[in-house]
Amino acid sequence: QVQLVESGGGLVQAGDSLRLSCVASGRTDSTYVMGWFRQAPGKEREFVAAINWSSVTINYADSVKGRFTISRDNAKNTVYLQMNRLKSEDTAVYSCAIDRRLFGVSTTVNDYDYWGQGTQVTVSS
Image (cartoon, rainbow, N blue to C red; front, side, top):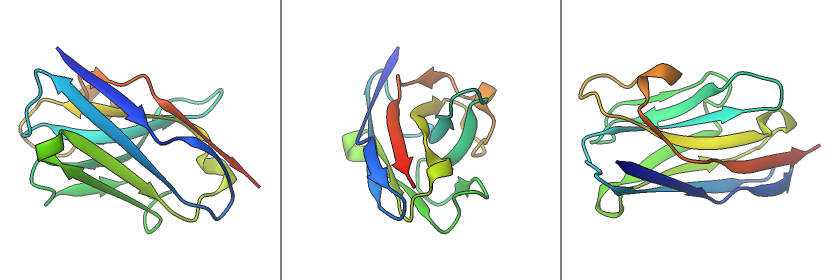
């Protein structure tokens, strides 16, 4: 089993920045794809960003391109999400996830096997 624990969420104003972290423990493997997803009240969970093991392949949702940056530190089993120029529509619970397949960087929720509990990000306008 793999456990994922997110941190770094909070209440900020529009235009501010936040940095989320997600630490993996248990039967982890640095070759896994790690991703961030978010879910706003009354909405489906949606893809935000994902990164492969070498950090060479990265995908972003169009809504966050140019504002969010995903990165990882394999030595620390940690993935980060730097969020800049936050908007009220970024308000959601942000969760990290692991995809154990060894190819591609998926943007699909169902491709991910392990999930954290999430951290709340609230952006006031």
